[in-house]
Image (cartoon, rainbow, N blue to C red; front, top):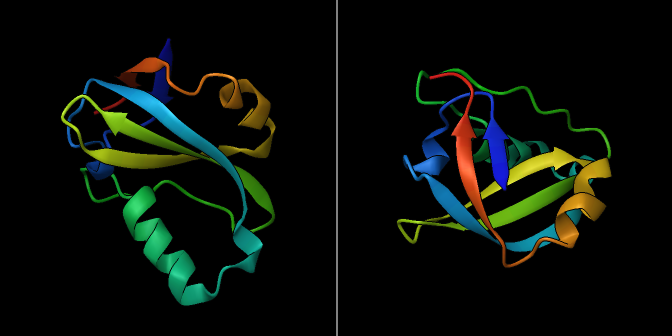
Length: 100
């Protein structure tokens, strides 16, 4: 299986595969602005200094992975992705970056 990313994100640490550890539904609208900004800095910053746009409105799916270098990272997906990934805990995904 593959997990795809639009950019080369710092959080990935050039890992090439990762095991899905957990899947959570989270409500970003409950976060205060400072915490949300910290989340953006961690989750959305690419190697080129750009940021993936993350909307603070409503629920989304949080995926937690353990990469092949034993570095843990998370990624946020649409709330509709919860059921797709919740049944895949423990599976190793190849990490595919569409752009560098």
